[in-house]
Length: 636
Image 1 (tube, rainbow, N blue to C red):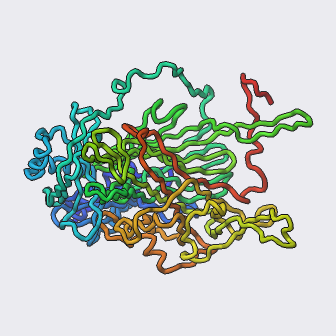
Image 2 (image 1 turned 45 degrees about the vertical axis):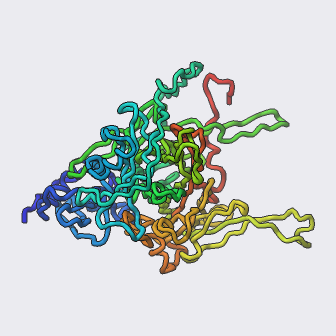
Image 3 (image 1 turned 45 degrees about the horizontal axis):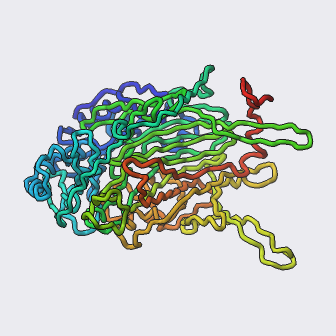
Protein backbone atom coordinates (compact mmCIF):
# COMPACT_ATOMS: atom_id res chain seq x y z
CA UNK A 1 0.00 0.00 0.00
CA UNK A 2 1.37 3.38 -0.99
CA UNK A 3 0.91 6.13 1.54
CA UNK A 4 0.83 9.82 0.71
CA UNK A 5 2.78 11.73 3.30
CA UNK A 6 0.85 14.22 5.47
CA UNK A 7 0.99 17.85 4.48
CA UNK A 8 -0.18 20.98 6.20
CA UNK A 9 -3.80 22.00 5.67
CA UNK A 10 -3.93 25.78 5.96
CA UNK A 11 -7.49 26.97 6.56
CA UNK A 12 -8.88 29.80 8.62
CA UNK A 13 -11.70 27.75 10.16
CA UNK A 14 -12.79 24.09 10.19
CA UNK A 15 -16.01 25.00 8.31
CA UNK A 16 -14.15 26.51 5.35
CA UNK A 17 -15.13 24.64 2.15
CA UNK A 18 -12.53 22.36 0.63
CA UNK A 19 -9.84 24.06 -1.41
CA UNK A 20 -8.69 22.86 -4.81
CA UNK A 21 -5.52 21.50 -3.21
CA UNK A 22 -7.56 19.54 -0.66
CA UNK A 23 -9.76 18.00 -3.36
CA UNK A 24 -6.65 16.94 -5.26
CA UNK A 25 -5.11 15.53 -2.08
CA UNK A 26 -8.26 13.54 -1.25
CA UNK A 27 -8.33 11.96 -4.70
CA UNK A 28 -4.59 11.22 -4.62
CA UNK A 29 -4.89 9.53 -1.23
CA UNK A 30 -7.85 7.42 -2.36
CA UNK A 31 -6.12 6.32 -5.52
CA UNK A 32 -2.95 5.49 -3.63
CA UNK A 33 -4.55 3.58 -0.76
CA UNK A 34 -7.49 1.96 -2.59
CA UNK A 35 -5.99 1.50 -6.03
CA UNK A 36 -8.73 3.46 -7.81
CA UNK A 37 -8.56 3.50 -11.58
CA UNK A 38 -10.19 5.50 -14.35
CA UNK A 39 -13.30 3.34 -13.89
CA UNK A 40 -14.06 5.35 -10.74
CA UNK A 41 -16.16 8.42 -11.47
CA UNK A 42 -16.48 11.04 -8.74
CA UNK A 43 -20.02 12.21 -8.04
CA UNK A 44 -19.12 14.72 -5.34
CA UNK A 45 -16.29 15.67 -3.01
CA UNK A 46 -17.11 18.01 -0.14
CA UNK A 47 -16.05 18.91 3.35
CA UNK A 48 -17.11 16.39 5.95
CA UNK A 49 -18.19 18.93 8.51
CA UNK A 50 -16.91 18.43 12.05
CA UNK A 51 -19.28 17.70 14.88
CA UNK A 52 -21.18 20.65 16.29
CA UNK A 53 -19.53 20.18 19.65
CA UNK A 54 -16.10 20.74 18.14
CA UNK A 55 -17.20 24.01 16.55
CA UNK A 56 -19.10 25.15 19.61
CA UNK A 57 -16.20 24.43 21.93
CA UNK A 58 -13.89 26.53 19.80
CA UNK A 59 -11.39 23.89 18.88
CA UNK A 60 -10.87 25.76 15.63
CA UNK A 61 -8.19 24.62 13.24
CA UNK A 62 -7.27 21.71 15.53
CA UNK A 63 -10.28 19.81 14.18
CA UNK A 64 -9.38 17.09 11.70
CA UNK A 65 -10.14 18.15 8.12
CA UNK A 66 -11.96 15.41 6.22
CA UNK A 67 -13.28 15.10 2.70
CA UNK A 68 -16.49 13.16 2.11
CA UNK A 69 -16.48 11.41 -1.26
CA UNK A 70 -19.27 9.80 -3.28
CA UNK A 71 -18.15 7.87 -6.34
CA UNK A 72 -19.39 5.43 -8.98
CA UNK A 73 -17.45 2.38 -10.04
CA UNK A 74 -18.07 1.73 -13.73
CA UNK A 75 -16.81 -1.86 -13.42
CA UNK A 76 -19.26 -3.13 -10.80
CA UNK A 77 -21.89 -0.38 -11.10
CA UNK A 78 -21.83 0.28 -7.35
CA UNK A 79 -21.93 3.55 -5.43
CA UNK A 80 -19.09 4.10 -2.96
CA UNK A 81 -18.73 6.43 0.02
CA UNK A 82 -15.45 7.42 1.53
CA UNK A 83 -13.92 9.71 4.10
CA UNK A 84 -10.36 10.97 3.71
CA UNK A 85 -8.43 12.72 6.45
CA UNK A 86 -6.73 15.73 4.93
CA UNK A 87 -4.87 16.33 8.16
CA UNK A 88 -3.23 12.89 8.20
CA UNK A 89 -3.51 12.19 4.45
CA UNK A 90 -5.18 8.83 5.11
CA UNK A 91 -8.38 7.06 4.13
CA UNK A 92 -10.71 6.82 7.11
CA UNK A 93 -13.34 4.74 5.30
CA UNK A 94 -14.20 3.45 1.83
CA UNK A 95 -17.27 1.27 1.41
CA UNK A 96 -19.78 0.24 -1.24
CA UNK A 97 -23.37 1.29 -0.56
CA UNK A 98 -25.51 -1.50 -2.01
CA UNK A 99 -28.92 -0.95 -3.54
CA UNK A 100 -28.63 2.78 -4.20
CA UNK A 101 -28.03 5.06 -7.15
CA UNK A 102 -25.85 8.13 -6.62
CA UNK A 103 -26.74 11.51 -8.05
CA UNK A 104 -26.57 12.05 -11.80
CA UNK A 105 -23.29 13.61 -12.90
CA UNK A 106 -22.69 16.25 -15.54
CA UNK A 107 -20.91 13.87 -17.87
CA UNK A 108 -23.93 11.55 -17.65
CA UNK A 109 -26.14 14.50 -18.64
CA UNK A 110 -24.22 14.92 -21.88
CA UNK A 111 -23.70 11.21 -22.44
CA UNK A 112 -27.46 10.66 -22.24
CA UNK A 113 -28.03 13.02 -25.15
CA UNK A 114 -25.44 11.33 -27.34
CA UNK A 115 -26.71 7.84 -26.50
CA UNK A 116 -30.25 8.80 -27.47
CA UNK A 117 -29.26 10.61 -30.66
CA UNK A 118 -27.28 7.60 -31.86
CA UNK A 119 -29.88 4.94 -31.09
CA UNK A 120 -31.37 3.46 -34.31
CA UNK A 121 -34.78 2.83 -32.76
CA UNK A 122 -35.05 6.37 -31.48
CA UNK A 123 -33.93 7.81 -34.82
CA UNK A 124 -36.60 5.75 -36.55
CA UNK A 125 -39.25 7.14 -34.19
CA UNK A 126 -37.99 10.67 -34.86
CA UNK A 127 -38.15 10.10 -38.61
CA UNK A 128 -41.82 9.17 -38.25
CA UNK A 129 -42.24 12.71 -36.92
CA UNK A 130 -40.31 14.29 -39.78
CA UNK A 131 -37.10 14.78 -37.75
CA UNK A 132 -34.03 13.43 -39.52
CA UNK A 133 -31.27 15.79 -38.36
CA UNK A 134 -30.41 14.74 -34.81
CA UNK A 135 -28.00 17.67 -34.49
CA UNK A 136 -31.11 19.80 -33.94
CA UNK A 137 -32.29 17.59 -31.07
CA UNK A 138 -32.25 18.68 -27.41
CA UNK A 139 -32.43 15.74 -24.99
CA UNK A 140 -33.27 16.50 -21.36
CA UNK A 141 -32.23 13.74 -18.93
CA UNK A 142 -35.09 13.42 -16.43
CA UNK A 143 -34.65 11.12 -13.46
CA UNK A 144 -36.47 7.82 -13.89
CA UNK A 145 -38.05 7.67 -10.46
CA UNK A 146 -39.39 4.42 -9.06
CA UNK A 147 -42.70 2.96 -10.21
CA UNK A 148 -41.94 -0.75 -9.98
CA UNK A 149 -41.99 -1.33 -13.72
CA UNK A 150 -38.68 0.13 -14.86
CA UNK A 151 -36.04 -1.85 -16.67
CA UNK A 152 -32.93 -2.71 -14.70
CA UNK A 153 -29.99 -0.33 -14.61
CA UNK A 154 -28.82 3.13 -13.69
CA UNK A 155 -31.53 4.97 -15.56
CA UNK A 156 -32.43 8.34 -16.98
CA UNK A 157 -35.73 9.07 -18.68
CA UNK A 158 -34.88 11.08 -21.79
CA UNK A 159 -37.35 13.57 -23.31
CA UNK A 160 -36.69 15.53 -26.49
CA UNK A 161 -37.22 18.91 -28.11
CA UNK A 162 -36.00 20.29 -31.45
CA UNK A 163 -34.21 23.50 -32.39
CA UNK A 164 -35.94 24.31 -35.67
CA UNK A 165 -34.23 27.63 -36.34
CA UNK A 166 -30.55 27.17 -35.68
CA UNK A 167 -28.43 26.41 -32.61
CA UNK A 168 -29.74 29.40 -30.60
CA UNK A 169 -33.41 28.59 -31.16
CA UNK A 170 -35.52 27.98 -28.06
CA UNK A 171 -36.09 24.26 -28.46
CA UNK A 172 -38.69 24.18 -25.68
CA UNK A 173 -41.07 25.74 -28.23
CA UNK A 174 -40.87 22.49 -30.21
CA UNK A 175 -41.44 19.41 -28.01
CA UNK A 176 -41.31 15.87 -29.35
CA UNK A 177 -44.41 14.58 -27.58
CA UNK A 178 -45.09 10.95 -26.65
CA UNK A 179 -41.54 9.74 -27.33
CA UNK A 180 -39.56 8.57 -24.29
CA UNK A 181 -36.24 6.77 -24.03
CA UNK A 182 -34.95 5.00 -20.93
CA UNK A 183 -31.17 5.21 -20.94
CA UNK A 184 -29.03 2.79 -18.95
CA UNK A 185 -26.08 4.95 -18.00
CA UNK A 186 -23.96 2.04 -16.80
CA UNK A 187 -24.42 0.04 -20.00
CA UNK A 188 -24.35 3.25 -22.09
CA UNK A 189 -27.35 2.25 -24.19
CA UNK A 190 -31.04 2.92 -24.71
CA UNK A 191 -32.71 0.19 -22.68
CA UNK A 192 -36.30 0.93 -23.65
CA UNK A 193 -38.27 3.20 -25.97
CA UNK A 194 -41.88 4.21 -25.42
CA UNK A 195 -43.77 5.67 -28.37
CA UNK A 196 -47.33 6.67 -27.52
CA UNK A 197 -48.20 8.03 -30.95
CA UNK A 198 -47.19 10.89 -33.20
CA UNK A 199 -48.23 14.42 -32.26
CA UNK A 200 -47.16 17.18 -34.68
CA UNK A 201 -44.19 19.18 -33.41
CA UNK A 202 -45.32 22.81 -32.79
CA UNK A 203 -43.37 25.11 -35.07
CA UNK A 204 -44.11 28.63 -33.80
CA UNK A 205 -40.92 30.25 -32.44
CA UNK A 206 -40.53 30.97 -28.74
CA UNK A 207 -37.29 32.95 -28.69
CA UNK A 208 -36.56 35.52 -26.00
CA UNK A 209 -33.27 37.21 -26.92
CA UNK A 210 -33.24 40.98 -27.58
CA UNK A 211 -33.49 40.57 -31.35
CA UNK A 212 -36.57 38.35 -30.94
CA UNK A 213 -38.20 40.81 -28.52
CA UNK A 214 -37.49 43.92 -30.59
CA UNK A 215 -38.39 46.72 -30.53
CA UNK A 216 -37.20 47.03 -26.94
CA UNK A 217 -38.70 49.69 -24.67
CA UNK A 218 -36.64 52.89 -24.89
CA UNK A 219 -37.77 54.84 -21.81
CA UNK A 220 -35.77 52.94 -19.19
CA UNK A 221 -33.16 55.24 -17.67
CA UNK A 222 -29.99 54.04 -15.89
CA UNK A 223 -30.24 53.04 -12.23
CA UNK A 224 -26.92 53.07 -10.42
CA UNK A 225 -26.12 51.74 -6.97
CA UNK A 226 -23.01 53.37 -5.52
CA UNK A 227 -21.35 53.29 -2.12
CA UNK A 228 -18.51 55.82 -2.32
CA UNK A 229 -17.18 54.87 1.11
CA UNK A 230 -17.46 51.14 0.46
CA UNK A 231 -19.84 48.66 2.04
CA UNK A 232 -20.55 47.96 5.70
CA UNK A 233 -19.53 44.33 5.16
CA UNK A 234 -16.37 42.67 6.43
CA UNK A 235 -15.14 39.41 4.93
CA UNK A 236 -12.35 37.24 6.32
CA UNK A 237 -12.07 34.07 4.29
CA UNK A 238 -15.64 32.76 4.42
CA UNK A 239 -16.56 34.62 7.62
CA UNK A 240 -18.90 37.57 7.10
CA UNK A 241 -19.61 40.40 9.49
CA UNK A 242 -22.36 42.95 8.85
CA UNK A 243 -23.88 45.32 11.39
CA UNK A 244 -24.42 43.04 14.42
CA UNK A 245 -24.57 39.86 12.36
CA UNK A 246 -21.80 37.31 12.00
CA UNK A 247 -21.87 34.09 9.99
CA UNK A 248 -19.87 31.81 7.74
CA UNK A 249 -20.64 31.13 4.08
CA UNK A 250 -20.36 27.53 2.92
CA UNK A 251 -21.12 25.71 -0.31
CA UNK A 252 -21.70 22.03 -1.12
CA UNK A 253 -22.35 20.27 -4.43
CA UNK A 254 -25.66 18.91 -3.18
CA UNK A 255 -27.12 21.92 -1.34
CA UNK A 256 -25.38 24.89 -2.84
CA UNK A 257 -25.21 27.83 -0.45
CA UNK A 258 -24.96 26.97 3.27
CA UNK A 259 -25.07 29.43 6.18
CA UNK A 260 -23.02 28.40 9.22
CA UNK A 261 -22.89 29.74 12.79
CA UNK A 262 -25.31 32.65 12.33
CA UNK A 263 -25.24 34.99 15.34
CA UNK A 264 -26.51 38.45 16.23
CA UNK A 265 -24.45 40.51 18.65
CA UNK A 266 -22.51 37.34 19.56
CA UNK A 267 -25.74 35.48 20.42
CA UNK A 268 -26.24 32.29 18.43
CA UNK A 269 -29.36 31.87 16.30
CA UNK A 270 -28.60 29.14 13.75
CA UNK A 271 -25.80 26.61 13.63
CA UNK A 272 -26.54 25.70 10.01
CA UNK A 273 -29.17 26.54 7.40
CA UNK A 274 -29.51 25.27 3.83
CA UNK A 275 -31.76 23.87 1.17
CA UNK A 276 -31.96 20.18 2.03
CA UNK A 277 -34.09 18.79 -0.79
CA UNK A 278 -36.53 19.79 -3.48
CA UNK A 279 -38.93 17.90 -5.74
CA UNK A 280 -40.99 19.06 -8.72
CA UNK A 281 -44.08 16.88 -9.24
CA UNK A 282 -46.09 17.38 -12.43
CA UNK A 283 -49.86 17.01 -12.45
CA UNK A 284 -50.34 15.89 -16.06
CA UNK A 285 -51.27 12.18 -16.53
CA UNK A 286 -50.10 12.21 -20.18
CA UNK A 287 -47.38 9.57 -20.80
CA UNK A 288 -44.63 12.12 -21.44
CA UNK A 289 -45.26 14.08 -18.26
CA UNK A 290 -46.78 11.78 -15.64
CA UNK A 291 -43.37 10.64 -14.37
CA UNK A 292 -41.77 14.07 -14.18
CA UNK A 293 -40.81 14.16 -10.50
CA UNK A 294 -37.26 15.50 -10.31
CA UNK A 295 -35.39 15.73 -6.99
CA UNK A 296 -33.13 18.62 -7.91
CA UNK A 297 -30.82 18.29 -4.90
CA UNK A 298 -30.82 14.55 -4.19
CA UNK A 299 -30.80 13.42 -7.83
CA UNK A 300 -28.94 16.22 -9.59
CA UNK A 301 -26.67 17.98 -7.03
CA UNK A 302 -28.15 21.45 -7.43
CA UNK A 303 -25.05 23.14 -6.02
CA UNK A 304 -22.98 21.69 -8.86
CA UNK A 305 -25.41 23.37 -11.28
CA UNK A 306 -24.82 26.86 -9.89
CA UNK A 307 -24.32 29.81 -12.24
CA UNK A 308 -21.30 32.06 -12.40
CA UNK A 309 -22.99 35.33 -11.41
CA UNK A 310 -22.46 38.56 -13.31
CA UNK A 311 -22.40 42.13 -12.05
CA UNK A 312 -25.29 44.22 -13.32
CA UNK A 313 -27.26 41.12 -14.30
CA UNK A 314 -27.52 38.77 -11.32
CA UNK A 315 -26.18 41.19 -8.71
CA UNK A 316 -26.35 44.98 -8.56
CA UNK A 317 -24.24 47.29 -6.43
CA UNK A 318 -20.96 46.86 -4.58
CA UNK A 319 -20.53 43.08 -4.64
CA UNK A 320 -18.32 40.56 -2.89
CA UNK A 321 -18.29 37.16 -4.59
CA UNK A 322 -17.42 33.75 -3.24
CA UNK A 323 -16.10 31.14 -5.64
CA UNK A 324 -17.14 27.50 -5.30
CA UNK A 325 -14.55 24.78 -5.70
CA UNK A 326 -16.06 21.50 -6.89
CA UNK A 327 -14.72 18.24 -8.29
CA UNK A 328 -15.42 17.00 -11.80
CA UNK A 329 -16.05 13.34 -12.59
CA UNK A 330 -12.31 12.68 -12.90
CA UNK A 331 -11.73 14.07 -9.42
CA UNK A 332 -10.11 17.23 -10.77
CA UNK A 333 -10.94 20.46 -8.90
CA UNK A 334 -13.00 22.97 -10.85
CA UNK A 335 -13.47 26.54 -9.65
CA UNK A 336 -16.87 28.06 -10.32
CA UNK A 337 -16.24 31.78 -10.31
CA UNK A 338 -18.69 34.07 -8.52
CA UNK A 339 -20.97 31.26 -7.35
CA UNK A 340 -22.26 33.25 -4.36
CA UNK A 341 -23.11 36.95 -4.37
CA UNK A 342 -22.85 39.04 -1.19
CA UNK A 343 -24.03 42.63 -0.99
CA UNK A 344 -26.20 45.03 0.98
CA UNK A 345 -29.20 46.93 -0.30
CA UNK A 346 -31.73 49.53 0.76
CA UNK A 347 -35.10 48.02 1.69
CA UNK A 348 -37.37 50.99 2.26
CA UNK A 349 -38.68 51.88 5.70
CA UNK A 350 -37.27 50.24 8.79
CA UNK A 351 -39.46 52.21 11.17
CA UNK A 352 -41.14 55.62 11.36
CA UNK A 353 -43.28 57.70 13.67
CA UNK A 354 -44.67 61.20 13.26
CA UNK A 355 -45.72 62.85 16.50
CA UNK A 356 -48.68 64.96 15.36
CA UNK A 357 -48.58 66.95 18.61
CA UNK A 358 -45.00 68.10 18.24
CA UNK A 359 -44.91 67.73 14.46
CA UNK A 360 -41.60 65.91 14.76
CA UNK A 361 -40.83 62.74 12.88
CA UNK A 362 -38.29 59.99 13.37
CA UNK A 363 -37.59 57.79 10.36
CA UNK A 364 -35.08 55.00 9.78
CA UNK A 365 -34.39 53.30 6.50
CA UNK A 366 -33.98 49.54 6.35
CA UNK A 367 -30.87 47.97 4.95
CA UNK A 368 -30.41 44.25 4.47
CA UNK A 369 -27.55 41.89 3.74
CA UNK A 370 -28.15 39.66 0.71
CA UNK A 371 -26.46 36.27 0.23
CA UNK A 372 -27.52 34.43 -2.91
CA UNK A 373 -26.81 31.86 -5.57
CA UNK A 374 -28.64 30.79 -8.73
CA UNK A 375 -28.77 27.30 -10.25
CA UNK A 376 -29.93 26.12 -13.65
CA UNK A 377 -31.59 22.71 -13.59
CA UNK A 378 -32.38 21.89 -17.21
CA UNK A 379 -35.08 24.32 -18.27
CA UNK A 380 -35.60 26.01 -14.87
CA UNK A 381 -33.61 28.57 -12.91
CA UNK A 382 -33.80 28.75 -9.13
CA UNK A 383 -32.46 31.73 -7.19
CA UNK A 384 -31.87 31.20 -3.47
CA UNK A 385 -31.66 34.37 -1.39
CA UNK A 386 -31.00 34.76 2.31
CA UNK A 387 -31.68 38.23 3.72
CA UNK A 388 -30.43 39.45 7.10
CA UNK A 389 -32.05 42.60 8.49
CA UNK A 390 -31.01 45.20 11.04
CA UNK A 391 -33.87 44.24 13.39
CA UNK A 392 -32.65 40.65 13.78
CA UNK A 393 -34.94 39.16 11.13
CA UNK A 394 -33.77 36.44 8.71
CA UNK A 395 -35.69 35.83 5.50
CA UNK A 396 -35.32 33.08 2.94
CA UNK A 397 -36.67 33.76 -0.53
CA UNK A 398 -36.69 31.48 -3.57
CA UNK A 399 -37.00 33.05 -7.02
CA UNK A 400 -38.27 30.67 -9.69
CA UNK A 401 -37.75 31.56 -13.34
CA UNK A 402 -36.46 30.05 -16.58
CA UNK A 403 -38.44 28.16 -19.21
CA UNK A 404 -41.35 25.84 -18.51
CA UNK A 405 -41.02 22.19 -19.48
CA UNK A 406 -43.41 21.97 -22.41
CA UNK A 407 -45.53 19.41 -24.22
CA UNK A 408 -47.76 19.24 -27.28
CA UNK A 409 -51.31 18.30 -28.16
CA UNK A 410 -52.74 17.94 -31.66
CA UNK A 411 -53.77 21.26 -33.26
CA UNK A 412 -57.33 22.14 -32.28
CA UNK A 413 -57.13 20.28 -28.97
CA UNK A 414 -56.79 21.78 -25.52
CA UNK A 415 -54.79 20.16 -22.74
CA UNK A 416 -56.79 19.17 -19.67
CA UNK A 417 -53.85 19.45 -17.26
CA UNK A 418 -52.00 22.53 -18.45
CA UNK A 419 -52.13 25.82 -20.28
CA UNK A 420 -52.21 26.08 -24.07
CA UNK A 421 -49.47 28.49 -25.17
CA UNK A 422 -49.87 28.62 -28.95
CA UNK A 423 -52.56 27.71 -31.47
CA UNK A 424 -50.29 24.93 -32.78
CA UNK A 425 -50.73 22.83 -29.63
CA UNK A 426 -47.75 23.88 -27.49
CA UNK A 427 -48.63 23.76 -23.81
CA UNK A 428 -47.13 23.79 -20.33
CA UNK A 429 -48.31 21.20 -17.78
CA UNK A 430 -49.44 22.19 -14.30
CA UNK A 431 -46.84 21.37 -11.64
CA UNK A 432 -45.56 22.20 -8.16
CA UNK A 433 -42.18 22.86 -6.53
CA UNK A 434 -41.51 21.65 -2.98
CA UNK A 435 -38.34 22.81 -1.28
CA UNK A 436 -37.32 21.60 2.15
CA UNK A 437 -34.97 23.72 4.26
CA UNK A 438 -32.96 22.24 7.10
CA UNK A 439 -32.70 24.78 9.94
CA UNK A 440 -30.33 23.66 12.68
CA UNK A 441 -31.28 26.11 15.42
CA UNK A 442 -29.08 27.22 18.31
CA UNK A 443 -31.19 29.97 19.89
CA UNK A 444 -28.86 31.29 22.59
CA UNK A 445 -27.37 27.82 22.82
CA UNK A 446 -28.12 24.24 21.84
CA UNK A 447 -30.96 23.38 24.25
CA UNK A 448 -34.12 24.50 22.48
CA UNK A 449 -37.81 23.61 22.31
CA UNK A 450 -40.39 24.28 19.61
CA UNK A 451 -43.85 25.72 20.23
CA UNK A 452 -46.86 25.75 17.95
CA UNK A 453 -48.46 29.20 18.27
CA UNK A 454 -51.89 30.08 16.95
CA UNK A 455 -54.60 32.62 17.69
CA UNK A 456 -58.08 31.65 18.85
CA UNK A 457 -61.22 33.56 19.84
CA UNK A 458 -62.49 33.51 23.40
CA UNK A 459 -66.01 32.08 23.72
CA UNK A 460 -68.73 34.66 24.39
CA UNK A 461 -69.58 35.03 28.06
CA UNK A 462 -68.88 37.09 31.13
CA UNK A 463 -65.17 37.22 30.31
CA UNK A 464 -65.91 38.34 26.75
CA UNK A 465 -69.12 40.35 26.94
CA UNK A 466 -68.61 42.20 23.63
CA UNK A 467 -67.37 39.15 21.73
CA UNK A 468 -64.20 40.85 20.65
CA UNK A 469 -61.61 38.87 22.60
CA UNK A 470 -58.97 36.64 21.02
CA UNK A 471 -55.53 35.52 22.17
CA UNK A 472 -52.42 33.59 21.19
CA UNK A 473 -51.96 30.05 22.44
CA UNK A 474 -48.56 28.39 22.60
CA UNK A 475 -48.11 24.63 22.91
CA UNK A 476 -44.74 22.95 23.32
CA UNK A 477 -44.20 20.14 20.82
CA UNK A 478 -42.74 17.42 23.00
CA UNK A 479 -42.23 14.61 20.47
CA UNK A 480 -41.58 14.22 16.76
CA UNK A 481 -45.14 13.06 16.07
CA UNK A 482 -46.55 16.32 17.45
CA UNK A 483 -44.22 18.37 15.27
CA UNK A 484 -45.49 17.12 11.91
CA UNK A 485 -47.73 20.01 10.99
CA UNK A 486 -49.10 22.07 8.12
CA UNK A 487 -49.69 25.79 7.88
CA UNK A 488 -53.00 27.23 9.09
CA UNK A 489 -53.23 30.86 7.97
CA UNK A 490 -56.79 31.21 9.30
CA UNK A 491 -55.48 30.66 12.83
CA UNK A 492 -52.30 32.72 12.16
CA UNK A 493 -50.22 29.63 12.95
CA UNK A 494 -46.50 30.11 13.44
CA UNK A 495 -43.85 28.06 15.20
CA UNK A 496 -41.49 29.42 17.81
CA UNK A 497 -38.09 28.01 18.69
CA UNK A 498 -37.33 28.91 22.29
CA UNK A 499 -34.52 28.43 24.79
CA UNK A 500 -36.26 27.51 28.08
CA UNK A 501 -33.08 28.24 30.05
CA UNK A 502 -32.59 31.83 28.87
CA UNK A 503 -35.15 34.45 29.88
CA UNK A 504 -35.78 37.93 28.60
CA UNK A 505 -36.66 41.06 30.58
CA UNK A 506 -40.23 39.93 31.25
CA UNK A 507 -39.24 36.45 32.37
CA UNK A 508 -40.21 34.62 29.17
CA UNK A 509 -37.90 32.29 27.23
CA UNK A 510 -36.04 33.91 24.36
CA UNK A 511 -37.03 32.70 20.93
CA UNK A 512 -37.26 32.99 17.16
CA UNK A 513 -40.53 32.66 15.25
CA UNK A 514 -40.84 30.76 11.96
CA UNK A 515 -43.42 32.67 9.93
CA UNK A 516 -44.71 30.86 6.82
CA UNK A 517 -45.28 32.66 3.56
CA UNK A 518 -47.61 31.46 0.84
CA UNK A 519 -47.60 27.66 0.77
CA UNK A 520 -49.44 24.64 -0.59
CA UNK A 521 -49.60 20.87 -0.12
CA UNK A 522 -49.09 18.27 -2.86
CA UNK A 523 -52.08 17.32 -5.00
CA UNK A 524 -50.59 13.91 -5.78
CA UNK A 525 -52.43 10.99 -4.17
CA UNK A 526 -51.04 9.69 -0.89
CA UNK A 527 -50.03 6.37 -2.44
CA UNK A 528 -48.50 7.93 -5.56
CA UNK A 529 -44.85 7.18 -6.17
CA UNK A 530 -43.79 10.78 -5.64
CA UNK A 531 -45.71 10.95 -2.35
CA UNK A 532 -43.81 7.93 -1.03
CA UNK A 533 -40.47 9.20 -2.25
CA UNK A 534 -40.99 12.82 -1.16
CA UNK A 535 -42.94 12.27 2.03
CA UNK A 536 -41.30 15.39 3.47
CA UNK A 537 -43.57 17.47 1.19
CA UNK A 538 -46.73 16.18 2.89
CA UNK A 539 -45.98 18.30 5.97
CA UNK A 540 -44.77 21.87 6.17
CA UNK A 541 -43.05 21.41 9.53
CA UNK A 542 -40.98 18.56 10.89
CA UNK A 543 -38.79 18.72 14.00
CA UNK A 544 -36.11 16.18 14.89
CA UNK A 545 -33.41 15.96 17.53
CA UNK A 546 -30.05 16.81 16.03
CA UNK A 547 -28.18 13.87 14.56
CA UNK A 548 -25.14 14.61 12.44
CA UNK A 549 -25.99 11.90 9.89
CA UNK A 550 -29.57 13.11 9.34
CA UNK A 551 -29.06 15.64 6.57
CA UNK A 552 -31.42 14.82 3.69
CA UNK A 553 -35.21 14.64 4.21
CA UNK A 554 -35.80 12.15 1.36
CA UNK A 555 -32.79 10.05 2.33
CA UNK A 556 -29.20 10.08 1.20
CA UNK A 557 -29.94 8.56 -2.21
CA UNK A 558 -33.44 9.33 -3.55
CA UNK A 559 -32.39 8.54 -7.14
CA UNK A 560 -34.53 5.53 -8.21
CA UNK A 561 -35.38 4.87 -4.53
CA UNK A 562 -38.80 3.43 -3.72
CA UNK A 563 -39.36 5.92 -0.88
CA UNK A 564 -39.76 5.97 2.87
CA UNK A 565 -36.22 7.15 3.65
CA UNK A 566 -35.28 10.32 5.50
CA UNK A 567 -37.80 12.12 7.66
CA UNK A 568 -40.52 9.44 7.69
CA UNK A 569 -37.96 6.82 8.67
CA UNK A 570 -36.26 8.89 11.36
CA UNK A 571 -39.44 10.18 12.98
CA UNK A 572 -40.98 6.72 13.22
CA UNK A 573 -39.18 6.41 16.56
CA UNK A 574 -41.15 9.45 17.83
CA UNK A 575 -38.13 10.77 19.71
CA UNK A 576 -38.42 13.51 22.34
CA UNK A 577 -37.62 17.00 21.03
CA UNK A 578 -38.13 19.16 24.12
CA UNK A 579 -35.26 21.11 25.67
CA UNK A 580 -32.67 19.55 23.39
CA UNK A 581 -30.64 20.27 20.27
CA UNK A 582 -33.37 20.50 17.61
CA UNK A 583 -33.43 20.66 13.83
CA UNK A 584 -36.46 22.26 12.16
CA UNK A 585 -37.32 21.14 8.63
CA UNK A 586 -39.58 23.57 6.78
CA UNK A 587 -41.21 22.58 3.49
CA UNK A 588 -42.02 25.40 1.12
CA UNK A 589 -44.49 24.70 -1.69
CA UNK A 590 -44.81 26.81 -4.83
CA UNK A 591 -47.80 26.04 -7.03
CA UNK A 592 -47.43 26.74 -10.74
CA UNK A 593 -50.56 26.79 -12.81
CA UNK A 594 -49.00 28.16 -16.02
CA UNK A 595 -50.11 31.41 -17.65
CA UNK A 596 -49.64 32.74 -21.15
CA UNK A 597 -47.52 35.43 -19.50
CA UNK A 598 -45.05 32.73 -18.39
CA UNK A 599 -44.04 32.06 -21.99
CA UNK A 600 -41.42 32.02 -23.44
CA UNK A 601 -39.48 32.89 -20.27
CA UNK A 602 -41.20 32.92 -16.93
CA UNK A 603 -41.06 36.16 -14.90
CA UNK A 604 -39.85 35.39 -11.39
CA UNK A 605 -42.25 33.69 -8.99
CA UNK A 606 -41.46 34.29 -5.33
CA UNK A 607 -41.78 31.94 -2.37
CA UNK A 608 -40.24 32.00 1.08
CA UNK A 609 -40.45 32.19 4.85
CA UNK A 610 -39.22 34.39 7.67
CA UNK A 611 -37.39 33.82 10.95
CA UNK A 612 -38.31 36.72 13.21
CA UNK A 613 -37.00 37.36 16.73
CA UNK A 614 -39.78 36.80 19.29
CA UNK A 615 -38.68 37.75 22.77
CA UNK A 616 -35.06 37.30 21.75
CA UNK A 617 -34.52 40.99 22.50
CA UNK A 618 -35.89 43.10 25.37
CA UNK A 619 -36.91 45.89 22.98
CA UNK A 620 -36.51 46.78 19.32
CA UNK A 621 -32.94 46.03 18.27
CA UNK A 622 -33.29 48.59 15.47
CA UNK A 623 -33.47 51.66 17.72
CA UNK A 624 -29.76 52.38 17.33
CA UNK A 625 -29.83 52.55 13.54
CA UNK A 626 -28.78 56.15 12.79
CA UNK A 627 -31.16 58.58 11.05
CA UNK A 628 -30.80 59.13 7.30
CA UNK A 629 -28.30 61.75 6.28
CA UNK A 630 -26.93 63.20 3.08
CA UNK A 631 -28.27 65.40 0.32
CA UNK A 632 -31.87 64.20 0.46
CA UNK A 633 -34.83 66.04 1.96
CA UNK A 634 -34.88 63.93 5.12
CA UNK A 635 -32.68 65.46 7.81
CA UNK A 636 -32.14 64.32 11.38
